[in-house]
Image (cartoon, rainbow, N blue to C red; front, side):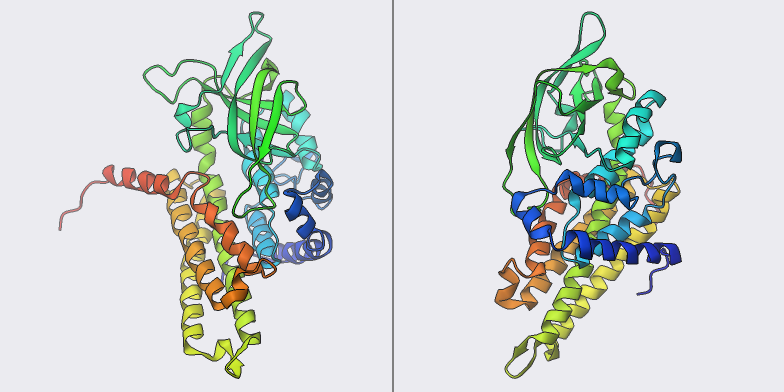
Length: 390
């Protein structure tokens, strides 16, 4: 189905980034995947081609306001190339918007030029052991010093993407009692990861997303200057809620990119693989399975493309994003499973891209709020709608 959201500039960028992937990423990716992260030099190379400066004002070395569609192109091309750029997407696509939205002028001058040049790798530390998607249950504390000059941070987080490579980490901590509203009393801090008392714990060994360094972290009497509070004290939950729709849109777009790549790999494989003297693609079952996958993906892609236009217009709601994440990540799971099956035994071998796509996409139904949470958000919206008479 023809897509209409990309213009000639987007397609020119697609060609440039495809060449960058072929030269700088594909040859190195097996090594990065084995070690569990890309070196920081890779982010500087991304900075050299300008993709770490999206939406950063030009006075700080960025590209200025940039269409979200460029991030979509990056995700689509990475999936087709058989590589993952989840760490970059997390840093520039999910965490950077917090700085753009909340940093004051002094903070912007310190942090944004580093981001634009690819010298800063960003992470966000929300999830804690035992709390999962319940952010209101956060127990990490930040206590203001008697002289009012700094906060003392204590606690632990888990499932933190970019943890071992991050230069700056946005940390959600409790600065006050929640009172009647258990969502209150939470504050955002930007932590320089060289600060004494901050430690990266074990790197978690995951089913998929091997390239993404996901770790446990801890804070022991970590001193954070008051100047590094991000936004207003006590308003973290509101800020997180405002940025989560974009994060969930990114996951929905990633699901569509994964499905498109899975279909492409399965289509190519079944044309090349002979069984009983003829290509696997010639069997009716193969044709029907691929047709189902194409139709499933096309419907989800149309949903995401519309949501991107809403996001760029500032109109993407939490419910819209929940619908996208739920539908598109579930679709990606179905499609990647069917495409793996078409590969037969080779689909289970990691040297084939479909195996990594299958393993990597499973977590998309969990992170960024589980799909059960997405259903809850959607269901709550129904209670605010008036019943229509039949």
